[in-house]
Image 1 (cartoon, rainbow over the protein chains, first blue to last red):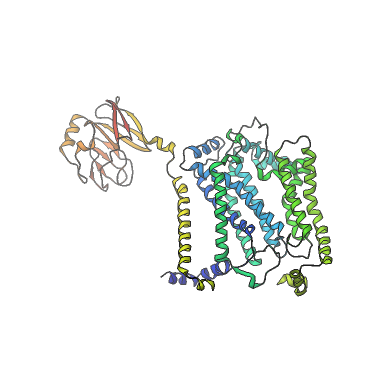
Image 2 (tube, rainbow over the protein chains, first blue to last red):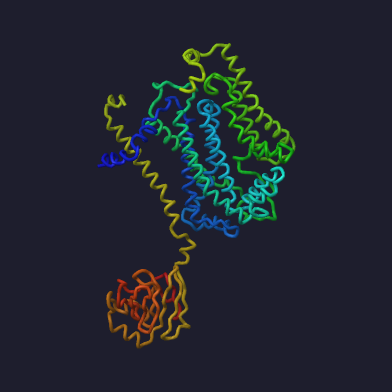
Length: 410
Length: 170
């Protein structure tokens, strides 16, 4: 019976062949480590955020007079409302943990390199969309941190030359963050996840065209691929189990780690909290904003620090495949960059006084210097490694390899 | 998979696989529960599950409509003649004794929603007439003419004083 139903569908829609091509028989490198789980995890987090978000939206009211109370109503009156909200608020942080690890893996293993440039760039767009969603969602509880966060971030657009004031006014629809701002942020916070879903589909189409990278960085021959199912479905679901254990610890025992106490005070446009800082996932970028002692310069530097990852496929000029596996200098650069981002995060979380000011400026310099130096360092490293002699598996690869362009087209 | 043919007992692997899928499916079902449950009335809504009504001001022959759980409740102070007339009959389509429908014979308390499709019947001397599809109820709230299938519902209520009732608690 079932096979007849599926046969009926297959004559009208490529169901079986699609599942076979993209899932059960999808060729996947057999040497993927657990660092390759995070794309799947990001997809899971997205689904959970959308599900909890839709159910929260059934009880939330986007009105300056009702928003704060409606969140408390969800927490106190709605059955499992506390769970839905803590899943959603913790899920926002979890989303950034997962995509930052996903990005760090891409950097370390050079997964952004040809032919995966579009895969990398669609991922960049996803990150921007997720950042925008997180920022707009943070306004909705209408607490003090929500309000002042939105006030400060919308003011950033005031740095736009000539029309800055009007841009800010347009963004808010009000002279300060107000009812119009809250309502539009809510509308867009509901819209953006579906844009993210669409972008994820594009990201997946790009992935399934160029296939997964792998820790060696060498494109594996067909005999080194294994079907995605059951090998990576089981590996992904095992990783999901580990993820859920950690995630649930935060949801059930530490939910307030990601909610500022100040946000339990209703928004007050007449009082700014003494210490105001963004959510942890924006801290490095926030530190870069503060490191530049000029409004427009700071805003440009911060925006640049987010989008600069897009240049990596061009900036990395090595001919050695992959990332850090065969490239010791690149590996050092990677770790310097990660430590630098952590330093920036720390600086962003502290009040800008004393040695933290120059520290933030040095870390900002290193952040951008990494990207600027990469073309020269990667080329020099390439020459040095070749002169020193490549490991046999790479040597064999270079001897078999047709000229670069032809190899890429294949 | 060629290796599976060499397994001593491949059914053990099948069992493990099916058990894993079953546990996973149970986990997903359990995780759905909070989502579905959150759509139930919240505690603030459930708090509206009782309503007090003061009967002192209702003269014989008059009635009062109060709101309970979002529904209109008809409280009718019946005259002795009406009570006597109602206690003589068993109603029409859905026969029921009038004594089973009241706690005190002069006070009739019914949910003011037609049992057909939920319109609010309008009152007259003989009982109620539903404006939507013409159902007729007598002074005991019993249906005398369709299309309504059953009598007007008697909500759970109790007298907390001689002239005060609480609706929603039996």
